[in-house]
Length: 306
Length: 297
Image 1 (cartoon, each protein chain N blue to C red):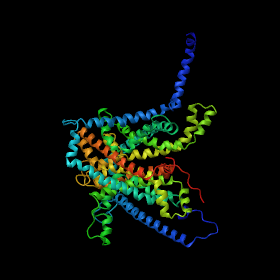
Image 2: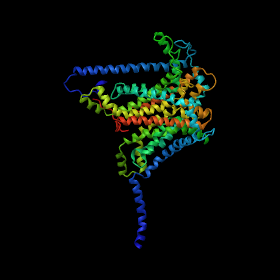
Image 3: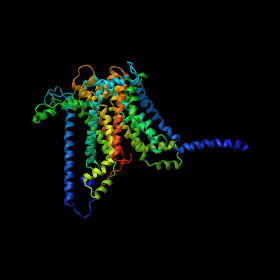
Image 4: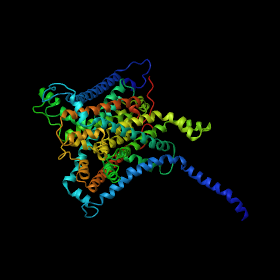
């Protein structure tokens, strides 16, 4: 008994120290406090609003059961069709941006003369912003714009082509603002692939196409998946350009317009949140599909350190 | 440029006929590619030019060029949209978002880059989500919440909303940057008896400065260009340039198209200045991965 009593004061700090050591062995120590502000921030300003929105979407302003908003959304074709319209714009635009950026980035990898200038030129459209792009499209590609003047002047077309205030206008706007971004990411992923791999393939007798198809593309696929996802996120919330160069009451009434109208024009926050939640679900489904596609292609790490 | 990716040619052996053919074909492909790119670029330049020309034009009805040139649309737009205060708000929001997101984000990315701990993957997912989800999705509930907290419509509301994608963005760009700094440097500093504070201030911070600068500029560009979140949370005194530009297009009343163009040109010009500054500090090809450039052969 006495021995235990004598040992106790010594064992106390010892045990505490071992607990701290044990935690430290598993990676928990005081340095973790450094992640706390960021975590708290994301929890309060991202996760909490999300849960709040989810809860709000099940609490319709007009009453009628928790699912009334979702029922209304999916039974009203004017609302339901926005999903289809958004996907019909966002998916081709994102796909085009990614596919078009691959050959350009591929030609720019390694040491190319004037690389920095060309990259800058290709990236500068990021700065245009939706409004200038929209104004530019309306003026340049509109019925009396320079483009149609040239086309009719050269007798390539008889009457001016309609490129704005329809699906094409929004698509063009999405490509102009989205391509630089996709290109930057793709170029960055491509530069991360060790050039020695391609050289090795070349010494083994692989032609340029074979090297691209069997060496570069599989290594690039994870990066392309991410690029596609991020491009799609950009294209998915096309709300300003859909209003300016599209037909916001018709073929380009995208889901974000519906969400905005519900929340801030009809002041039905509950319906607005419902549409926002539906958007999030669609987004997650698309990301999920992309990840499945990526998994079927290649398992392993990207070229460089991610 | 094709020669650079070619394997080191055998010394003495001249290029064979087939190698020549391959090279010519590849040259053809890349020439075609650059012609297409150049064609599209010319169109883009013309598109921008038509806006800029119009913003300096007097009247433009169907001709190749406006009837005369003037700069008064800029003065008009500046006054009509109260651009001096809008610019000030934009600057305040951007600087606040940059500073706060770096202060919150960099320590977090340090831990994420250096430590292994339970729940790290969950935490990473938590930080990726705000970037993967379109801003308008969380923007609507967030704006609703900010309204009920009486923060929306004010400068702080706009700053808070813009921080939501900015903090994860800083974390995601800084984590790989910190990973490539050799941890042995820190270990050596500690071996020499430096306390944690000194490790941070004298060793880590100088090493981190290029990365932080890059992250700062990228966040700045993103914040100035961020439309949705600012649009959803701003009030009359807290509009940034993008939002006021959008309002100029859509708000009631008939406006001269030229003053909208003038304003769009101002916006694009300021963004371009920012981007050119950014590209001086950030190598765009090393945003995601950092590799050494191939040594010259």
